[in-house]
Length: 471
Image (cartoon, rainbow, N blue to C red; front, side):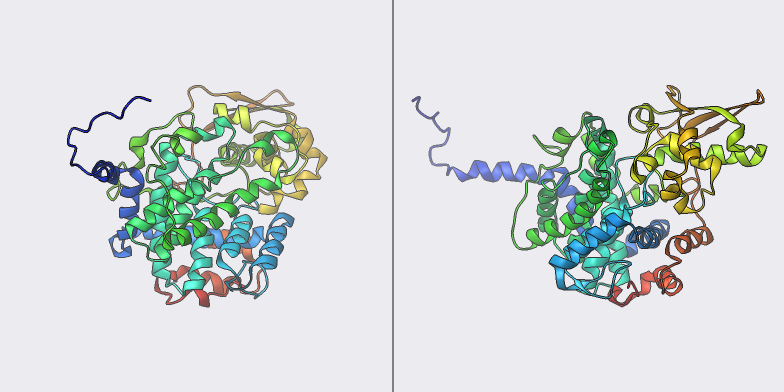
């Protein structure tokens, strides 16, 4: 064997180089994000971003209460109650029984994503803030008796970190077959949990490093024609993983601080394209939380502008489904590759398909969330209309969510509409009254819905989130 190269300073201990190496690593994106998130005070957050975090919380609780009624959410709840009995936290829409915080977060995350109504970001970045962050904030907040202001600060911090990670991915993970929110979610969830546990920046950085090994979720459900329930699990696992990562970090467990931009890190492993500079761009100056987007319809976000257009054309021209001979939707290449199915065997596949969502907009009241459920799945007219919808790529689309809808009628007329926005986006935010209306549509069957809504609207002053009437 060749001899080891001579050291330029034979008296220099071997660990000095390691110290220098570690010192250089202090500037990683995970360390910068952890320093920011651990130091964030709610008083330093602009009022508009506190308001967005509050809206995110209100919206998610209502959405999860609706979601808790579906079989896949009930399966997750039974699992959580079986293995988590004797804890401190509650499952939304379940019994008053208390279970462990990680499993409550899992069950509530599944319920949150159970019906395609949970929040996201505009422009899209493969993130679902409500379903990733709020289940952690509530479950761990109950265990720790956190105040409402602590919960809101944690949600803001989680958004600021998770949104930047998603943005740096250039939303390219799904081109490789990953379900992006299952990848980004554990990072945001770890920040929320770490904040509530009062981790310092070093421990929070470790939590981010651990969270990177807990990413998961593939898009097989979009191609298989079966097994769609698993999509709902991805956000529940993200929420659960955040608590796992933060608790392990609290106990001294370590994770790589180059987890985001380093070799075999998140951007290199899970993304076909990325821009590492976006991980920390504008940190503390440009608030990502205000990019939060609240869904109006329970379907994939790429269907929102075509659904809104079809609804507007239907109402303006008083057309019925039987008047339609063909529909063309021009949209992003992702719609054509991922969201153009003409057959749906389950609710998730229907909600994921632009043709089916457009068909629903012609035959039902899209303000009713249940219009996008079993009612549509069992309606032959919806299936027949979906087969009349052709999706094409719109090369000059102004954004990834924009669409051009053209409806050909049997009488020879053609109706057309472009749309690049919908109610609930940062440029067209829901008013307080509209958010209340959505909450009550979703949670109306829950015994304490009105009382819960009023307490969530005043969450910033709540001394203990464990007192919320969640069950």
